[in-house]
Every structure is written in structure tokens, then in C-alpha cells.
Image (cartoon, rainbow, N blue to C red; front, side, top):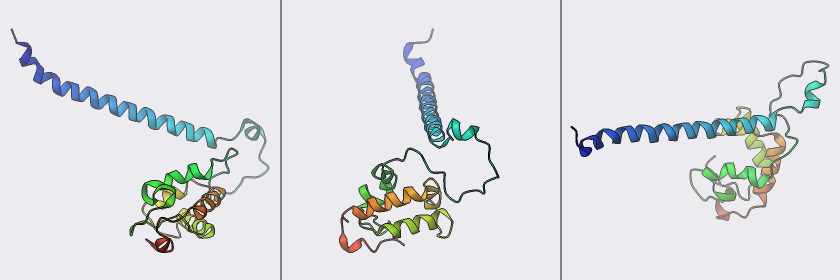
Length: 157
């Protein structure tokens, strides 16, 4: 007969597998629910889906306008990981967004979205926002006080 202590080492890998499987399934569930929520926000309303289209519309260079816009301060949080809270990052690798003129922000983001400005991440990020979103975020960042006023016009290009 095996003692209880001889079974314990065999259970540890099983516990790790179960814990890892649970973490992966919860992560997948979270990702799926966020994707469904994002799709629901951009889905056409039933009234517009029922209306016949007169002619095929050309693909838009930017995402469709959201009838329920998200506040600019909320959208700006997506920039915080790299550019700091409210764009107030005084770092040599990331351009601070706080205090940046709104038109400069909009033009830069449109250039990222359209592929006119090379990037590894920003092109993908910019594709998720409309021109109106860029304008709102640009105005939000322009109104923020830079943490380092001398760095507001400098930083990474």
C-alpha cells in the first residue's frame, strides 16, 4: 500500500496543470467577452440594417462613427501604458502627449492609421479610432499640463 506522502508529488503537477488550464480558460473567456462587447458597439442598428443600400459604399479609411461616443479621458487611458497617465510621461523613448497641440496629435494618429508613419504598434492602435475620436483625444491631451514642459515638444519622433 502506498503512503499518502508518496502520492503528494504526483498531485503537484496535476494541480499545476489544473491551475494553468483554469487560468487559460478564464483568460480566453475574458478575451471573448471583450471582443463581443466591442463588436456590439460597432454593429449597425436594426433600423440602418433594414434600409436598402442605394449603391455600394467604398471602404472607409477610418472606423465607422460610434453613435455613443466614449469620453476622451476614457479613450486616453489606452495611451497611458506607454505615454503615461494623461500623457504626462517625461521619457526619452515615448513622446509625452500632455500639452501636445490637438492638430499635431490628430495628424500623427491619422498618419499611423494610414501607414504614412512607420511603427510597430501605433498603426494597429490607431485603426481602432475614428477621426472624431482623435480630435477628442487631441483636445484632451492639449488641455493636460506637461509633467516636464521642456520635454513637451521633444521625445521620440
